[in-house]
Structures are given as C-alpha cells and as structure tokens.
Amino acid sequence: MKKTYASPQAGLQANQYIFKEPVNQEIDLIQLSGLHYYNLALNSYNRHDMESALPQMQALSRYTSQRLNETMQVMLETLRSDRKVDPTLKDYYLAKYAHLNPAADSSQKP
Image (cartoon, rainbow, N blue to C red; front, side, top):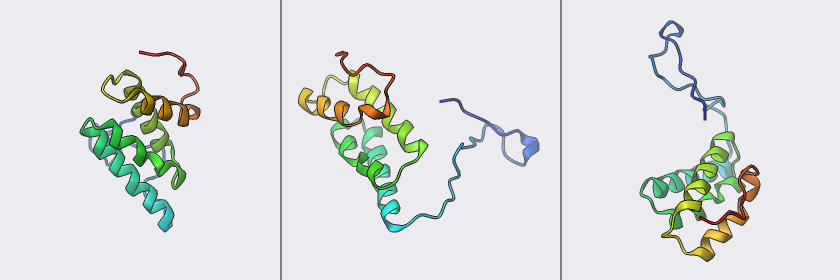
C-alpha cells in the first residue's frame, strides 16, 4: 500500500498519514457493528492469533471499505504462510475470501 504523507505546509505534521477514504463518515448501527468486528479482528491479528482474527472479518458483510479490504488481503497473505493454523480452517478462509485478492493463486500451498 502506497502511503501519502502530508507536507508541513499543509498544516499537518510531517509523516502524518493521509487516508484515501474519509474517516469521518456517518454510519448506521449495522456499520458500527462491522467496525467493531474489524477492531476485534485487528486486535487478534496483532496478537498473532489468526484463528480468532478471521471469524471477526465478518465485518466485511456489515461495513465495506477499501481499508477493510486491504486489511483482509494482508490477513490472507499471513494465513497462507502460517503453519500453525489448522489446514481445514486455512482452506475454508482462503476460499471464502478469495474474491478479495484475485491476483493471488489460491491453489498454491506453502
């Protein structure tokens, strides 16, 4: 993912990330629950607990955004190389979310 940084002249601090998508959108309660699941998934992912992170990505059915899709692609790439995850579970999630990363060959096994 290409990062865009603001210049100090723009009134922002150097190295401040500017998201492509606005982060201050109004959302409804269903979308809010999707963001909650997204945060739970990130928390599990950051603890290196893929088996807990992936079920939480049900967030995609409640709230969609480029950021969620990019995060899911990163999680899928991590899953492909994670030898600790049950192979049946791994295959299930790789198939379920294959549409998010069409460039990746889901038939490859690590």
